[in-house]
Length: 615
Picture 1 (cartoon, rainbow, N blue to C red):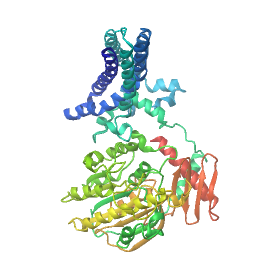
Picture 2: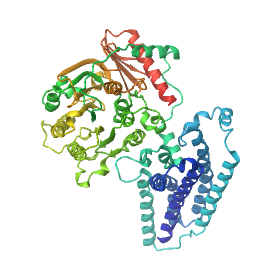
Picture 3: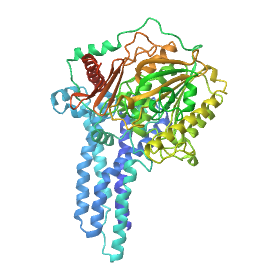
Picture 4: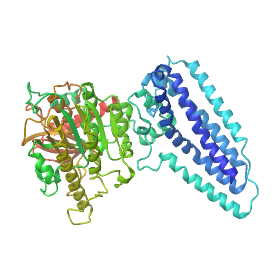
């Protein structure tokens, strides 16, 4: 038993320590950037990166752990030899990736992933792009790191002993222990017991981009990128010549008014940005849904400005997040938020307001690592991020984290005497499946649609309690509250994946800072239009949000564009068209929809995805 434990533990920690040494070499190679970090931040680079090192060490240990198990069973040295040769093959390959990343990071500004694969068919260009690299220094570092790894492993493996003869009972016990250790690797591979498996967000801890990048394990990053296919090199939506497509897209954003009506009483109001999970318009009484599901939202609509015809840009939370906070369109088969090097190039509302002196914070009752959301928020340089781990375990009464009323209580607690002006983003979660709620069900039934309906009602109840308490705070009279959904939902009615009704969501502006009440705006718009609409009201520049229009602009072309899995929809006053990008034909097309609208949708798909690839 002791021999088995020694082999498995020593092998696993050999790779872990090797990757930590590699991180040290990365920091030394980029000493100019490392010198801008404090000692505490450098320590956190190693600490946060350790989790990813453990994960990839576990991936590498799966086969050796199996070989150790076979050696224990059959007492054959061949299995130890196979483990040694496996390691002698992996070390040079991984060392090559790690050393190549040193210089590629200098050129690209992001850690090595699957991107170089696009250059394999043009080796001459790839070599030319590396012509200025300090080749001899990199070769020397490669040899140094490889020798350290090989000699360390050789010294380690020499201590491995062949299993002695044992009685049957001992053999069974060792086999059971070996199987347990092999199964236990699942834990470091996925990064722990948490619901969301390890991703890049888990090593992000700083507003300094280099510090976050330094924590990434390069072999893990390459593997993850290849498996997830986050990187695409060719636009699959080439419907028109590029100049044609660009002209069609410019056309829908061309019209603009000289002046926009002002909705606010004064300058620099606090902004409370509440994103409601799965809040489809179909359940909102003020938008034509049943009145009994959201009685508090319906009443609140009378106190502010309700936008009737707003559509989500996509059908996932992480996609809606980028559309709402960066005004950026959604991709069909992936999401830009999964690639931090791309989201670093997006504008963000939090960053714009922070430049104006706003105190920024983000509250979520679940895990921010979900879908890489944390890395996106870190790029937005929020002053404060609150997530599941910031709540006491006694409040973990939902599969995803804490329920909405607990989340809202935390926001209120932290805003008793806030620094003003503030920009606070709150993202709810209780109306996400499995739709468990902490209050008695309002509507009878156990089917999934009724459960969703009850969770919808609960969030409305929690929101009302929060708004009622917020109105008693001194900052309420100078606060603009924005209520909007991250995406829609198939329920009620089990909409088809492409249906416009699935993507229609609420957008409501309320709060003491508003100069207008009981107003309805019927312009058709998208989540991507919200940021410039808000920034214009605040008197701030918004030209960098090129995929947006002002929802209050009477001359702006009224339209909403959204995507679903390998397809898109476009809604205008003439009607809606949904299009299958695989079949290259409409799924649904209202009678009044013109060929030009269809072409504008196809052009939007082409140009927006092309822009995503260039990020």
